[in-house]
Length: 341
Ligand SMILES: [Zn+2]
Image (cartoon, rainbow, N blue to C red; front, side, top):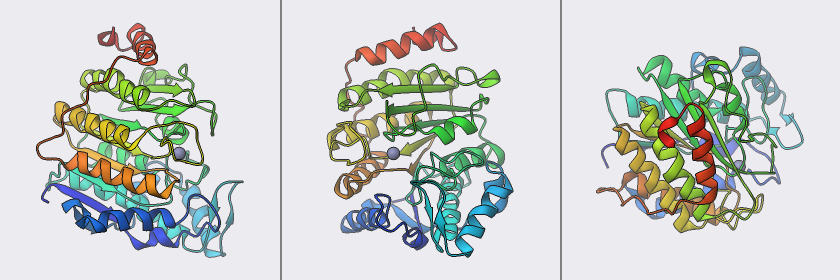
C-alpha cells in the first residue's frame, strides 16, 4: 500500500540471547502473523545498517565500540539482563538503521504516512552511555535525533507505551525541549525510574511527561491517558513527527509485568495515536520495543499496523476521563501546559 512502510532485517534473528524472554522467537512470531495477512499491504523493506554518524548523534563512539568489541570476541553478559552475542552488533546496527530509515520514509521526499521498524534488540532502556534492560542502542532516540538533525523536524513527540519506563529515552532528552517524551509505565517495576515528578530539567523542564500506573491497570487507564493527556499535549506541542515506542508487555498475557491491557485496548490506543498524528497533520512512526508473550506481541503489532494504515482512519475511541488522567492533567496544567487545565 503506498505510504505505509515496514522495515525489517534478518540480522534481528542473529542477536542470540539464549533462554531469555527477549529472544529471536519474538521476531519470528511477529513476521509469521504479518506474513499470514500479506503484511497488511505494507511495503516491506530491508533496513540498512545505521551510519556511525546517526548513532553517534545519540551515543558516544566508545559505547558503540564496546558493543562491537564484545560481539567480535564472541559476546557475553553486559548486565544481569542484557546479553551480546556474535551477531548482536550487526543486529543493533540494523535496528538503529530501521529507525533511521523509518524517519527518512516519513519526512523525506517519499512522505509516507506511517512506517514501522520491527527489530530487536529493543532500545528504550539504553542510555547514551550504557546498554541495559535487553537494549543496546536506543533506536527511538536515534530516530528522533535523526528527524531533528537531518529531516527538518523542529519538534518530535515520542509516546512510550511499553509497560516499562523508557529510562534511556527519558535520560537522553532530559534537558531538551525539542523532544516531548511521554511514557505510560507500570510502577513499581523495572527499571524503577519514571516518577511523575521527573518532568525534565533546564530547558527540558515540562517536556518529559511520566505517567506511572499501578499494576493491574488496563484499557481504561492506558486509553484515558492517551486520549486525555497525550492528545491535548500533542495539540499544544505541535510536533513535526509522532513516534511510538511500541511495547506490548502491558498486555494481560505478558509474563514480565502486571498490567492487563487487552487486544481491544491496543486497537484503541493505536487508533488514538493515529488520530493524534492526523490531527497534528504529521506522520506516525512505530518503533518496536518489548512484549514477551509471543501471541499477544504478534497480535499487538498487527493491530497497531492495521490501525496506523486504516483508510479511512478508525474512529478515535471514546475514553472516559480516568481519575489518574485527571490528576496528570491538573499537574501538567500547573506547569508548562496550561491548556490542559
Ligand atoms: Zn518493556
